[in-house]
Length: 238
Length: 246
Image 1 (spheres, chains in turn brown, cyan):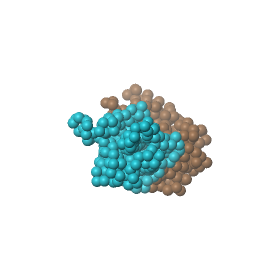
Image 2 (cartoon, chains in turn yellow, brown; image 1 turned 120 degrees about the horizontal axis):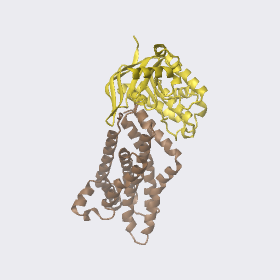
Image 3 (cartoon, chains in turn orange, yellow; image 1 turned 60 degrees about the vertical axis):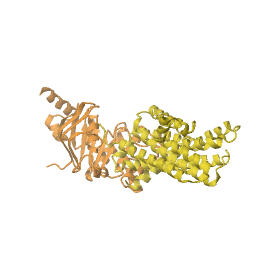
Image 4 (cartoon, chains in turn blue, cyan; image 1 turned 60 degrees about the horizontal axis):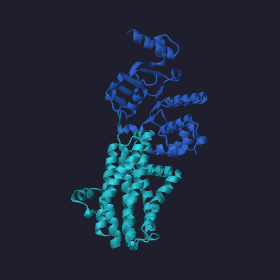
């Protein structure tokens, strides 16, 4: 049986009287990289916000064995929003140290987090002077600094150059090998090749969730994009 | 609540402020310049500034701190850093006290400069002990301004709204606090309203500081009311910060 970091049952999120997300049952495997894939606006961010405890929802969501939103989880869950949420008028190092202080991480942990995202050279620069991709990495480092057991990353590789993106995925794989659970969203289907497991989301509902191999074998396809389209075809036909 | 997080937040806000030189200069200098201008326009009417200057000194820190803190916290809400902080072990009160600590410190320096100039260059004679009472009043009012600004920012979605909140909060108090018409000369309805407005007590305390030349029981009571209002504003501000949203 799969060891789950996140277990969702009968989850629904309503916003402005409109249901934006419905999940009957969904698990995120512990110690692996799960890709949350789907077009823009399909509910990826809402699902992630639910897991990290900032989204109101109905139903049951358990994270690392505790109800989503529990105060104990705030030490153990790291969340990186799609738009980098860092202080533009602070330096890179100041940002990471400040978010580190929130979880009791010291200066060493901050340096290690900066090294992990390859920002050591820019540590003294103000975040507002950086490019969008660099700022996104500051935002990521600010979540890594607390060494969370579950990392929830909303489109972390958008706008990065291919070399850096590859390095980041390798780093995510190292984290997963060390026991960290990663849930990574993307609207780019190619990113699926770096994930152990995939969740396809479309129009606020789960289209499919399985291991990557299982997904490809089940649909008889060789790429996530084809698998997604095949799933969609089944759904339309049914 | 966690002292480490509160302190780190206060230090972070001060670092951000230090990078913004224009704001620092305006915070520290603006109230003194306005008071100086006031002193100048009353320079041909003997004794007039002695009356009105200290009362004005009781209002000024509120205005300045209110604007700065309401915009600062609005910015925190809009850039996503607030939501991020609320996913960490930070308590809401840690954030508010961190802001209160940082801006409170600036407020005390601001009050020191304005009081010092009022007593020396602007020539208000209140003896040294009266000066201390004025400084203490101005500092308390500034902290209240910071707390009220934090609270008010919850009602603003945009910077335009945040800036408009300032006159909405301040002008009624300015009219009713006894600066333009002594409170005892207001009609009974307006007088009763002015009893509920914290800045009325700031003006009372300033007047008493100058007239009695020291810290009296009445000033102590006035400052307790303003401090209590600051505490209420902080508590109300914490209630408006919600971890979860729809």
